[in-house]
Image (tube, rainbow, N blue to C red; front, side):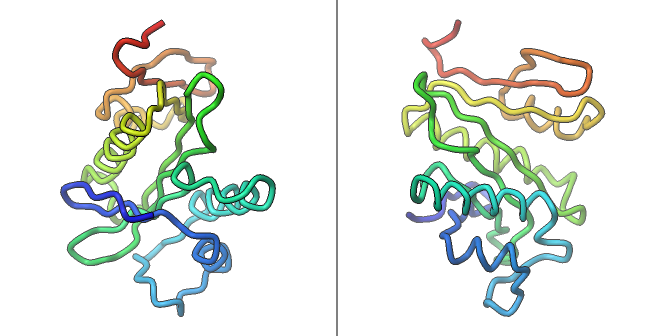
Length: 167
């Protein structure tokens, strides 16, 4: 599968060997990692991807993507599907960036790119959640067109539904 391109970013679908290298923190693999990458969230996403691969096979294109800056080629974070669409065509997503590139619009751009891909792939709705106090992540989802659908006091839940599929 090829990279998904946005204006400034490449969303690179991780292969199982790349995910293994990421979990191991293997900087010698030839990948250009920004300082702080991979972080705990990136490693967790890669582990989830590898667990899925072991249980049901490679879920790509509904797997984990490394966020790379086109201009430098550096990996600065990740965005992923938490699995293939469910029986209703819904998916859950997650994302994160290293601190050095936060506030540059990369997370919103990467999420919009993933949402466009999901729509083209027939996904009916995309859901995500964020910590109640994580204002930056809430802004990212809102900027990508997702709307707040629930708040349990600990987490805020967002969703975007393909037009014509609204509840």
